[in-house]
Image (cartoon, rainbow, N blue to C red; front, side, top):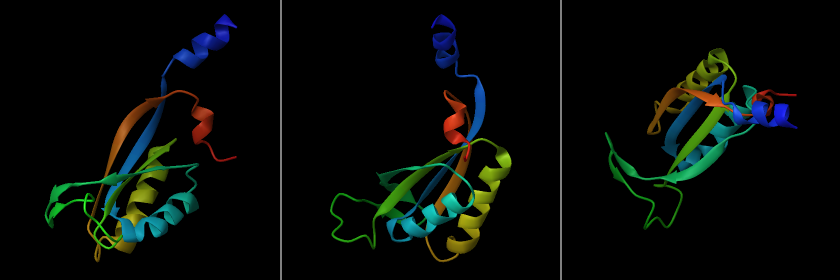
Amino acid sequence: MAALLQTIARMDQKAKKIVIITEKVIEEGVTEIIEACGATGYTITPAEGKGSRGVRSNSHVSSDATANVKIEVIVADTQRADEIAGKVAEKYFQNYSGITYALDVEILRPQKFLKQ
């Protein structure tokens, strides 16, 4: 049991976290790309802020047309992260607002991020 707890308590497995902040109207298409590239999951939260297209707020949004979302994805390797970011940018960022960035992260339970 002690060995198991030691293994669980260590965050020494390297991975990549991709963050995509974009318009809610393309959320489904972006998540389809994420899944097609082999990611095992993602987290979506509402996003507000100010950028090149001005202030974007979800507080008084009556439709998805002007809402933004933040989609976070953790993948096991840089190649998969680059693939996701590249495909999303190529398909959507000429016509929709969006930004993508990547972070190096350390994770517990690395098996959660490997496609079975």
